[in-house]
Length: 429
Ligand code: DAH
Image (cartoon, rainbow, N blue to C red):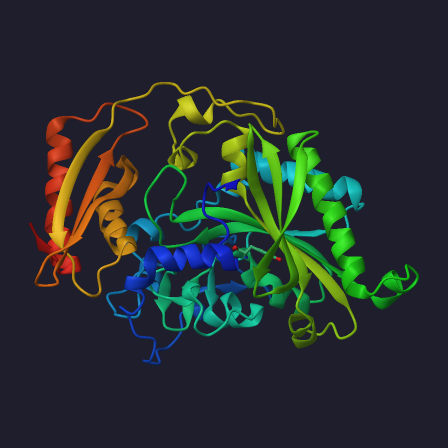
């Protein structure tokens, strides 16, 4: 079994079924039926091209306002805590583990493909439902489209939940070799490897018929062989001489699809998902006779292992004791924990209702406690004779940076209880 850390395989069949297993009772709480206007206009377009970029990052450009993203409207489920992460762009900080890792991957592609890959790292994370799902053939009933799993700005606009959301537009713009790095957003549980914002890199390469015709292979086999060679080289570039294996997988956008695992620190670890792009995606976007490969990798999960970072919240820390440990261009550094403050556990029990979901609970906890919430864990679950179901959750509060006082924690827990009752409409026990 591969080690499973940090969210990544949202779209693989195996993961979505375990995902389903974890969340099936929660699926129907929001409806998708009401047509609303889109927020797409909040992203400006480059004058010289068609790609949207974060307006806040344009010189002299207009900032994305909070009201564009956070709205008191049933089709919107973006909290302020998520809005505050827009534009943080950890992947653009050269001294940050996420930026250092991005640059190390760039280095591999530049060296092996003579700078042929175009690099994008400032594409706007606000995308249409079409870009995020339809353009990459995510089925209409796929769990990832639910309001429980994805942040919707309105019924037609989401915070991208994967960098694959940009494949189609980049193809249409004529790019044949590209890397897209960006922040992606998913509603999720709370623990040391899950955070509602993380970073992915997408890779894409198109081949024209003359590239595979001479090989004697068909286009798909040629692309699959090339893909595997490329990614094995990348894994060696990052991890050294490791043992690797390929696992057959499923993604809506590729066929065949694979996952690469490496044997690292005595465990098999999933590194990335990839495959040969579905012909329909190429055809729909102006690449009629070509074949292509694509891959997507989660930067946090790799950085946690490569830099020995034990908790995903640390990536967001501004504490100098964290930030000062990393150096531009240096991959070998291992993080030294500067101190470990004790966690404080608080339990709460309530009778759930039909629309209760753990992701919604976690959103409330994060809304109150922010990064002080370390873990939310279901520790008891039973149904009484009347058919009422009770859940007991244990919340671990811990700061990475200081000791928390009893008063502070009690106040956080009081607010969590209050909001769980009012926002989730459950009955506290
Ligand atoms: N988008 C996938 C995810 O977030 C990752 C992925 C898998 C990207 C396979 C790809 C791919 O381009 O071919 O789980």
